[in-house]
Image (cartoon, rainbow, N blue to C red; front, side, top):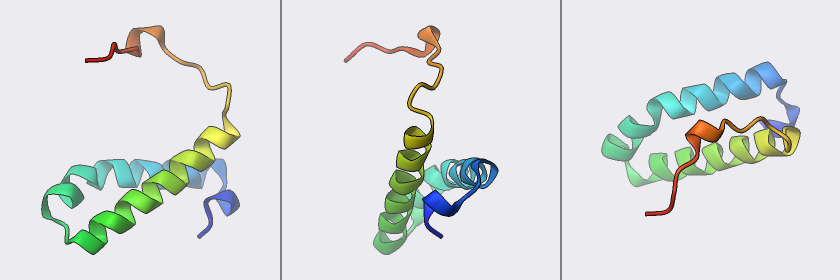
Length: 66
């Protein structure tokens, strides 16, 4: 489903699901599954950022470049 068609609740649920399965997909998924996972994650996160451009950023979460 197009991320733009998801409710906020569904968008967050799908992002949560992808983030929970990220390491397993990276370590054990075939290349096609990893590519799909990466594409879908990018789509959902891009939609989230478009909906919440002024999201609240926690200053304690900021990291410096390595």
